[in-house]
Length: 195
Image 1 (cartoon, helix red, strand yellow):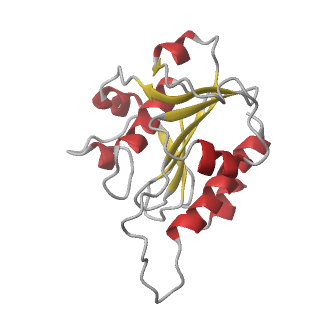
Image 2 (tube, rainbow, N blue to C red):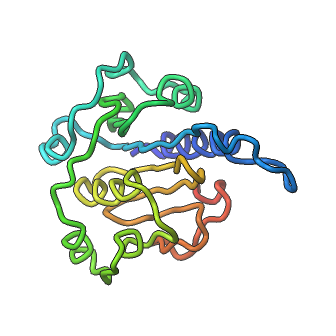
């Protein structure tokens, strides 16, 4: 993985988060009813890897499939991919391979937790170290990164703007201080996640 694209993804998500989820202190957020962006990005997808292909359902016929990821990733995400349902798959060669694709969760969460030596909880979100209940996008990132360990998954919550990075079935970086990441400490500032 080129660290340049890792940096570009985190900075783009961070800027989108600032635009859509931040208001000055003491002011109410008048945009509560607005549909805000949420993303599931996968970097390192390999079309020649049988495991990668067998764990993903195709996606939409988006006009950008097959094109190079532009330098202005934020604009691409906000304009062209804002209302895409499903994941965006980017190859190691920085090509957009799938847009609106869905992960096929062929492995029960209990098996993933067992393989990662995690203590099972009544709720999957607790088992995998999330600080609070999360939607499918985030759990799919856990399972997908477990099934495709060569990849890095990125999510931005459509409800809270929380940003996470996943690898090997674990949250490795998060803007949520209470999350159990595989890193030594949580990331409270986006700039720290990039390093």
